[in-house]
Image (tube, one colour):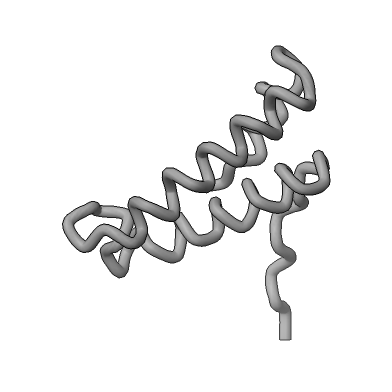
Length: 75
């Protein structure tokens, strides 16, 4: 549930400042959802995905840089 494509699309269409503002609002909404026990975002299968999205959104809102996907750990 990565936000990278959405952020790239918003940045290209609406500009960086608008995309950063959207990322801040979306991260706030996702945080509320994760903290609400009756919301599916707080459930074990979904919570890690929402938390990853929150990290991506916050990083983008702060830097304007879209994060790269995590590299798989190959031992």
